[in-house]
Image (cartoon, rainbow, N blue to C red; front, top):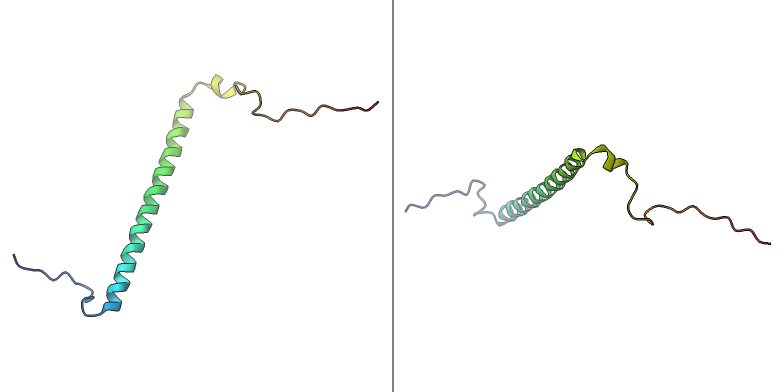
Length: 80
């Protein structure tokens, strides 16, 4: 097999250029991971929203089943 030179930047001759190219590729890789994570998070939120739209209207208007999930009114205390 013949070896092909894929060193388009000439980084074999300049170690500083090789370092800069490596740092750039690591930054682009990290940005790609962050973009994938954000895209998955947005898709998950839209899926949950879509499932919520499929629920009947009565289920959205029902009272909360847990009794302490809302603020209880304060009772007035009078001193005699």
